[in-house]
Length: 266
Image (tube, rainbow, N blue to C red; front, side, top):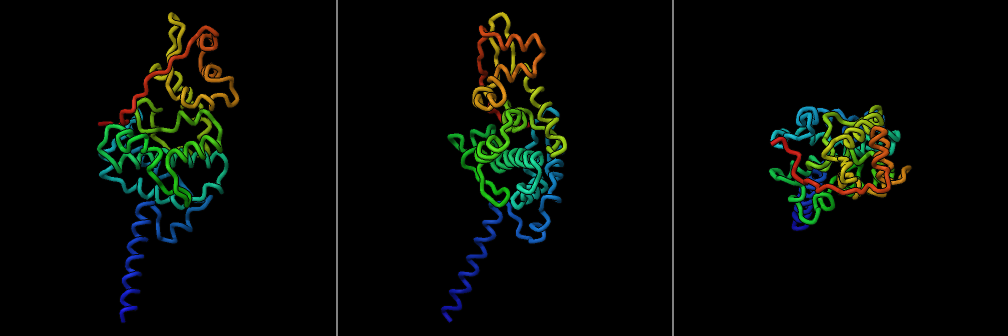
């Protein structure tokens, strides 16, 4: 009798642990959901709806509203948790991981909202290095997704202009999810818009200086992939006269302070 009681207690304990595990990692237990998420049926529609409903044209997020109505975001994260991006095309995989990164950043903020900066969520950059999420059946931090997958497997410096770290100096969060069909065009557009923005890149001909976002400093090596460095990369997206200026030998680059204030509508 004692053995039976102990067995029942153990089973109940394991049941509670399994529920907590599924909730923490946003994994759907329903086998019908798992079976439906394959290369042909996976969709970013839910995330697309989240962006359209909660992001304004400046790329700011209504975190208050989203925290009160997280259902679509949570359902999208459940799909990400059991998806199989390896079965997708190259562009579809890139769109998958960029959308996943941006969605998980939003999730990280919502879970700790209200806050005024991702740097206040966990000390020592812990928001990116210690918060953990389930994607494609594995556990990742945001740093692991960005550095271990997106930068390593896709090797495209333009991704830095569509990955959004929920901060004022980041690229603006777009109001539509990325797809295999549009990601190439949108990479180009986002890169061009970022470089043309005076708060991200500014030329001072009098002082012979180029003031630019620290993104170009932090990821300097990425801008050597297919280019002779940051200046050569910038020149590709500037008018001829400006391109000639940034390539001049006597021009110095100065990196702007990074504003980590939350990209919050409020």
